[in-house]
Length: 167
Image (cartoon, rainbow, N blue to C red; front, top):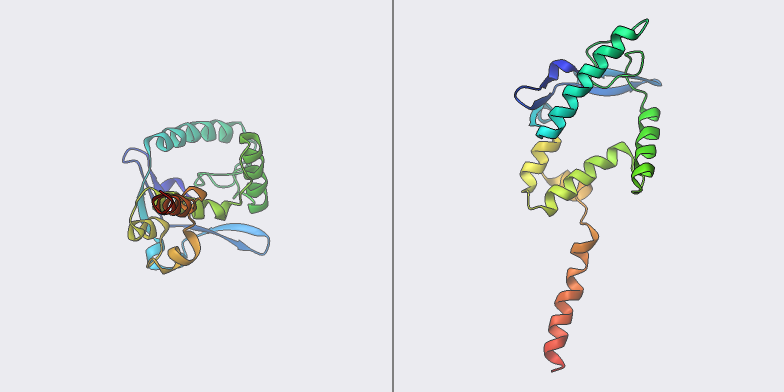
């Protein structure tokens, strides 16, 4: 993500870029998978506040660094380069361990978002828009996972039925 895609005053992020691996090197590109991938997302106020703090901290790191490669990057290494995907996975695993939650991979966060939004009653079409999908098919087949509490509803229903039969 580039700072030019972030509007902190409006609380919006426009998805105009993606990160692709070229060999073993991560590069930012404006070549997105589909036209629907390009979208503008409203961002929660807490995230806007975190991004404001990040921008200030990043500016200070840039001034202190002997060299900084790309000042457009929102999430950059200590030298201002694109983050290495393996390092991102390791850091996410470390954060999960510290938080005492199951370790997830970065792409699994999309699945979690889809599942949580679905569980909260957000229509599949809106979730697809949020994730940049052209329709809900991929979302229904791949991304949406029902959390464990919704699986237990069958036992509750059957207990009610059996309870009426045994009275």
